Amino acid sequence: MASEEKNISDDGVVARNSVEVSDIKRDLPEDAGNRKGVDVAATFLADLDPAILVEPISAKEFRKVLWKIDLTILPLLWITTIVGAVDKVIISNAAIYGLRTDDHLVGNDFNWVGSIFYFGYLGFEYPAAILIQRLPVGKFFAVTVFMWAALMMCTAATDNYGGILAVRFLMGMFEAVIFPVATIITVMWWRTEEHPFRIACWFSQFSSIFSGIVSYGIGHTHTALHPWRLLFLVLGAFSLLWAIVLWFFLPDNPLKCWYMSDREKYVVLERVKDNNTGVEDKKIKWYQVRECLMDPKTWLLAVFAVSQNIPNGGLITFAAIIVSGLGYSPLITTLLGIPTGVVATVWSWIMAYPCSKFKNSRCFIMATANLVTLVCAILMWKLPSSNKHGLLAPTTSSTRTGALM
Image (spheres, rainbow, N blue to C red):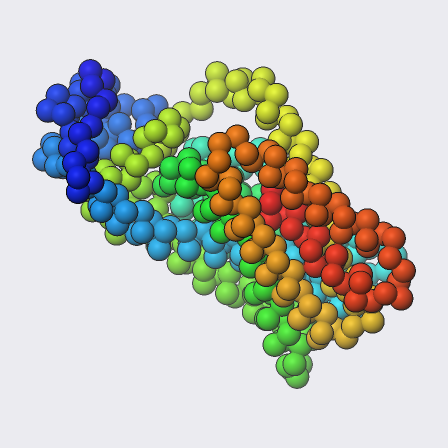
């Protein structure tokens, strides 16, 4: 553009220079409104009423739009990741409610029931990435939630090892899209410096709180169905209903948000333009793929994620069995999962603040925070099995790993 300067008045109004509006239009491709491979933001700006571009944006308007995003988009992401995590980890509580007996699991069978989920997850991650690129993100997300919810309800009908393996594998496939989609949507709606706290919200472990409360309540039921079957039916039904909510309320991108005006959509674009990521482009740019694969940071983060999830996945799958093995009843065991979620959630929020305020601090904070997890792992390894309360505390605290990734 010929000029990127803005005049900021005392009341926080961002007043555009007179040449800037014409520059915006001039810098767009001539056929931006019709051409494929052009970011949707360019198409939107090409067709936007010039009167909207001319009107100055005040700091108050920026804050108002941010509040609207935080009160609509963030809860949709947050609840979806909670539902996904619950559907994934509830297998732990189901194990102490009779699943292993009813499905005739012996020896290492339950280990494979926990692991097979991640085989499906790994196998579908890359095909899912292509589908996310090609399909409307919001609608695709809603369909995958619907599918894993249906599979969760099907889990209640399993009565043998092969059946539960098949269902868990398929669930892993459909849940592989959760974090990629949530990350993409976060980039669409929030500025880079706003990401840490929002990600800490939807990546928090509220799922442990939710699943603990629901499991405790269902543990008190007296029905023809065993509690673990009822657990999968209730949580699966909730997920089905939530998929419908997502279909109608989660937009594919900010410019397709039916409950925002054109002016608000324009303010959203103004807010995130300095991210330099665009909003949505359905064309795969292979030079960007090569750049990603050649960047050492990509591989360092990949190794870090794998290192985190090896202990994290095992602990999540066997958490209830571990706590129950300390001598607690099934009902008390489900309640003891709640502090895990509280600790992990609060810890992730605390760590998100310095990450958003101090540049180049994220790697140091992640490394420092993992020292806590390392200490907890050593305590669980070295403390005698007779020290029931001593073993319970590090079991709760060690799950901060997942919240900090």
